[in-house]
Image 1 (cartoon, one colour):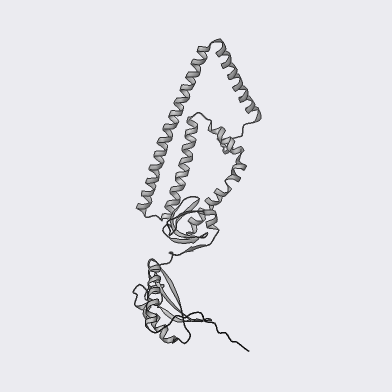
Image 2 (cartoon, rainbow, N blue to C red; image 1 turned 45 degrees about the vertical axis):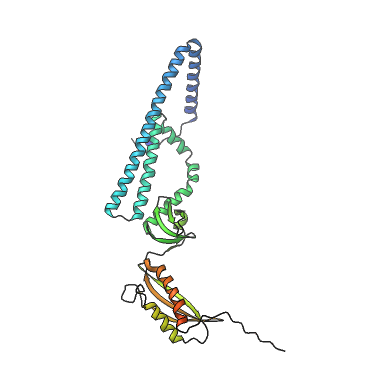
Length: 309
């Protein structure tokens, strides 16, 4: 059998007309039988109803068993990927794809069990292929975006990312979308089409990150003394890394800018990704408490007004 023979052909107008005529003839025969021999007609109708009912029961049974088998397959895939320590992003994508594919196969099997000619259904889908393609263009774009994300791996499950105006932890990646869990416990689903074509800020890709604190003090502050105090505060926290850690550098402090009502100093230090916010808030608290104790004053906005008479 050649490939052309396997492609479903849309029924011609003559074939459709022939089927319609056959249906009309069958209806006319049933009406004639019903008028001449009602008991025989009703008996045949009852037999047809019983046969169709059996088909419906078999279809329901196939659906229940098939849905159960699909769940088993999904669980088996999850266990397999966990055993092989496969990347969670790849595992989530493949599991979702397999689930969708098996569900489509199950739907076709149930339809064929009911006696519907699947070749005719495929022919109708082929005839409406253009319309279906236009309707599913967004879904296909999301699927393609998922393949791009899977190939280039800008993030993985468990990473904290910022994309499309949302910042959260990647919980799972299906074939058409990625689900984020936001810090306030909201769940956001982002389609892969827009996700793959936009900027993705990954906060947890690198093991270490740099923190920065800017401190505004009044004019007249001893710059060298202030920088030394800021470094002392940083070095008292063991979570702030030094140059011995790969990818990190020793803490530094410097005069950052001369503003209208204050001079701004900057303190920079490297920490591990898991310690980022804890260290940030702890050093903020230490700066606010210890600088005034060491004689450094935070400024108030000042405005000099000159009056001329």
